[in-house]
Image (cartoon, rainbow, N blue to C red; front, side, top):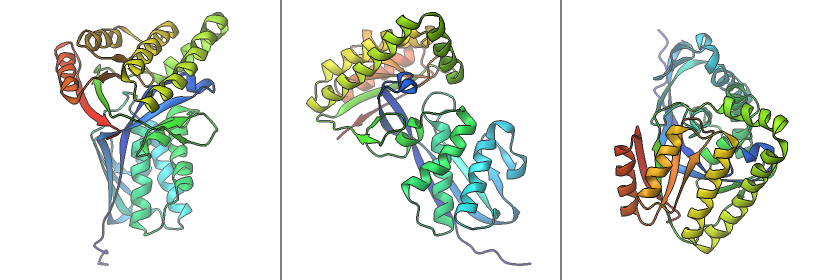
Amino acid sequence: MLELPQKTAIGSAHSKLILVGEHAVVYGEPAIALPFPEIQVKAMIDPVHGPIRIDSSFYTGPLSSMPEKLQGIAVCIKKTCKKIDHDASGFRIQITSTIPIGRGLGSSAAIAIAIVRSLYAYFEEELERDDLMELVDIAETHAHGSPSGIDMAAASSEVPIWFEKDKEIDYVQISAPLHLVVADTGRIGDTHAAVASIKEKYKVEYTETKQSITHLGELTGHAREALQKGDHSLLGSIMNRAQDELVKLGVSDESIDRLTKVAQKSGALGAKLTGGGRGGCIIALAKSIKHAKEIADALLVGGADQTWYFTVGE
């Protein structure tokens, strides 16, 4: 039997958070997104005989038999192999992830980023950022229809980003470290439904919906200024006001509202949903890392499925 080369390659990517601007970004307004390195996905490739095999918690089997909802990943793998001029066979991709799926944390983008990085590493090819974004967009388009691109931009960045659809990515200066808490409602968010509901709302309540979207864009600009000044009290107030607009738009829900109130009662400077809403996660701004732990503990008592706390900008 032909002996396979004993080599492996690993690609990884972290999660992401939207600090402010979700949903408004779909309509051309800016958003600020943060890397969330506490939870990650890794893709490891090793050689096997025959067709490509996928081993993961969400699917195990040959690439050719991947379910419809994962076809974006399958197409991304094939297109990556074609781009680097290698046969789409003879290896296995093992995917491990600590990013909960469907929580607005960019799991699908992170998985695709990790896979593309691992394939380039395995075949010893140099990966340019433009090529990475092009290939990951294939998976994201299958997963989300017409994605803004913010998930893959943030999940592949090591620093906070300023994102506007169809424009160059800019980076956001943080003058003072942010102590953040993320809490999972335990419910899968329905981004498709949330985006569709705002689109429908535009038809029946145009003026009010337009005002909310515009205000979210303005709040994003103010948030950037607060970050540059290190004014966390102002930033927290902006987060609370952004949440008010997201409630008006109908993308918050009882579980999100409950957890944001728990965070605020625990002294959070600000708290809001992050991502698509209607389930998923909230993000809260604490005064210190010690305070962040206290908020995280209170959120668990208040019904959060799981929490994380960390610092950005140190």
